[in-house]
Length: 328
Image (cartoon, rainbow, N blue to C red):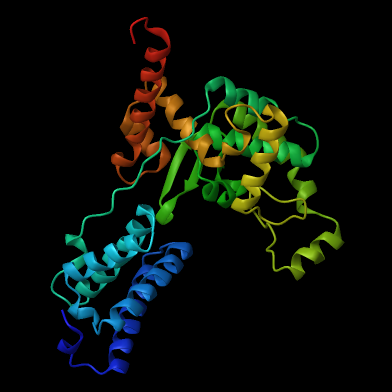
């Protein structure tokens, strides 16, 4: 499509793109999409709008070949397949919004294939490694008690880092030995909690949380100057009484991995909160749990997201065969 096919003036074309993006942002906000997702989509769509404006296109003039041309341009610029796939997802969301509001008849991005991305297998700890890591966190001071409870719970329930820091004190059902978790899209699920995690959590709440909730006044003033929120009823608190963030969780796990395991050949830095989640799912599969059950426990919207763990199992079997069979 040539630039002179559009009858809209350049200013009007720019306004059309701004209005389309704003409409999608409103739609995402109403659907409780994560702030991080809205921000990423906004950046990606502004880049596409700039590219489309240079070619003289308004939103209702975009065709599948236009989107393919843009994706091809990203590839020529050296964009990774994962980056192109993310930008294509943003475009699909934009044109889906325009279609829902009657501005276009079809979604041109739906007819464009997603760039193929490498899908490395998730990092998984063995059961012995997971036990060694958790048992290596001493039940000493408040921070140690907090970290032991936090990572016991992460592994016992397969929690995302975001879910871990979002927990509230009353999310624990002590009688039912289960946890209420608010996952992606504010979907609530209930996950059983094993005995070691329940014991660690009880110790933290009885012996450590109150100490963290009443920090030194100087530390509290410092947090206030930095704009950090107080913990209120948050389950896991920092040493200054604020609610932990996901970066805090990752940092503390790296610290304990380094202390407990050292710089092993498997790589201390490779263990993340998500590695504990992957290990949770893989160990359930090893123990005979079916994919549908694991899907519900992980909070996956589709079982296709859970099927990656069958690849982990298959890879481990192949590795064991290659090591053990005399004619492998």
